[in-house]
Amino acid sequence: MRKASDITVLPRFMGEEGEKYFTLQFSCPQQPKAHIVFVPPFGEEMNRCRALVSEQARRFARSGYACTIIDLYGTGDSQGELRDASLQIWQRNIHLTLETLQREMSVPLILWGLRLGAFIALDFAAKSALAIDSLLLWQPVIAGERYVTQILRQRVASLASKEGVPETTTEIRKRLAQGESVEVSGYTIGGALMADIESLSLAHLTALCPGKIYWLENVSETGASLATGSLTAIEKLKSLQNDVVAHRFTGPQVWQLHKRDSLPELISVTSSLLP
Image (cartoon, rainbow, N blue to C red; front, side, top):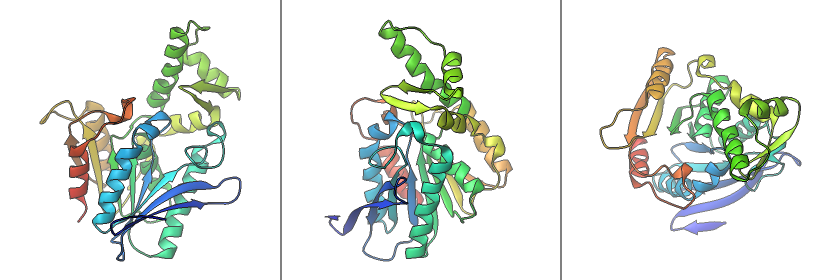
C-alpha cells in the first residue's frame, strides 16, 4: 500500500486462479461519491498513457472519488497471454471489478475508458445488468473493424520496413480466422480477440446509462470541430435517449507518442466534469 498525502494507492488482484487480473486502486479517506473504473486502451497505447491515467486517477481521488485502473486479462501485470484474451473475458474483468467494489461500498458506478477502452465501456454499459451511472470517454474508437485494420497495418508496415515477406491486412485476417496468432508491434494477438473487436458497433448499442456520457476528443486547435465520424456517433447515441455531452481539448496525442508527454487541458476539463 502506498500513500500520496491523503490518497491510498492499493495494488490488488481480482478473479480466479488462471484468470487473475491486476488492478490499481486510488482511494480517498472519506466515503467516495462514486466508484470510477478505468478500461484501458489496447496494446502499446496502454503503456504510453499510464502516467496520464494515473495523474487523472489521483485528481479523482483528491476530489472524493474512488478510482480503479484495470489491467485486463493478458495485459500488463495480469495473468494470461494477450493471444488468449477475448472480449468476453475482458467483460468479465470489468463486471467482477464493479460488482466487488459495489459490494464493498454501495455508491454510484462510473465507467471511464480511453480509445478502444472507451468503446468497450460503451459496449459493456449496453449489455450489463449492472447499473452504470455515467460514462467518461477519452478519444473513443468508434468503429471496431476500422480499428482492427489500423492495428494490422502496423504489421504490414513493419514487414515492409524489415524487408520481410509482405502481407496484406486481408491475408493477416485469414491467418487469424484460421486460428493462427500473429505479432503486431511486439504483441502476439489471436483471432478471437480481433474478431470480437471487429464486432463492436454503435449500431448494436441501446440506452446506456441514466446519467451523462462525457465525450472528450482531441482537436488540432482551440475552436476546431470534432471529427465527422465522432459527430455522427454522438448523434447516434443521442437518438438512443442518451445524454451525451461533448468536450474538445488540444495537446499532443499521447496514445500515439513513443515518449512520455502531458495533457494538462484534458486533465483540467475531465476534473471539472464530475461534481
